Image (cartoon, rainbow, N blue to C red; front, side):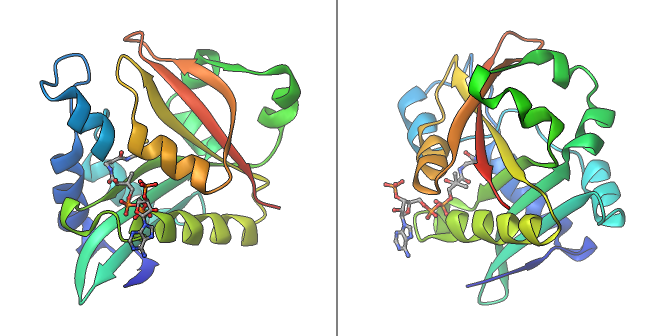
Length: 189
Ligand SMILES: CC(C)(COP(=O)(O)OP(=O)(O)OC[C@H]1O[C@@H](n2cnc3c(N)ncnc32)[C@H](O)[C@@H]1OP(=O)(O)O)[C@@H](O)C(=O)NCCC(=O)NCCS
């Protein structure tokens, strides 16, 4: 398996993987399975990925490849760019007291990670996370922040990924639909 920077040609594979993982947590029928295997809630559009690829200064997008097949991706934003795109995000989050200074730091915001089911559980997600974190550190980001759904349906798979990779909970967020997310955070430099 290799992890490399994504290109425009990777977009169809990324969208395929993404679409296979999107669920509506309030109505998904097999709750246990979704929680154990992980899921995405908000889709990223093709246009969003294209724009991000065209602006590599504000984004890091990596894909994993097994035998020339793209099997997963990680898509991250400079948090300032993320806040420009989603101005309501800043007001939706509550940071714990000991992490109060976090939002003044340079943050890399993890927008999406997904790995094809066929290739999951082989370390691909971890390798993608490490590769994006390493590049983030090289670019001078102080923290890597990822949001993982807590309620109405815990994303157990992604929570485990965070825990195993030394992320800790810095706070929570509540989105416009009342969904509660945990803000996982890791110091990069
Ligand atoms: C979350 C997700 C990206 C994890 O990807 P992954 O490739 O399965 O992750 P990893 O393989 O690195 O780690 C998962 C498991 O494989 C195990 N593993 C790690 N390296 C391994 C290896 N070389 N061989 C076999 N197993 C391995 C890990 O121990 C881990 O086990 P655990 O879940 O029991 O703790 C993937 O499950 C996914 O796409 N889920 C749906 C989308 C999603 O939830 N995204 C996150 C939204 S916040």
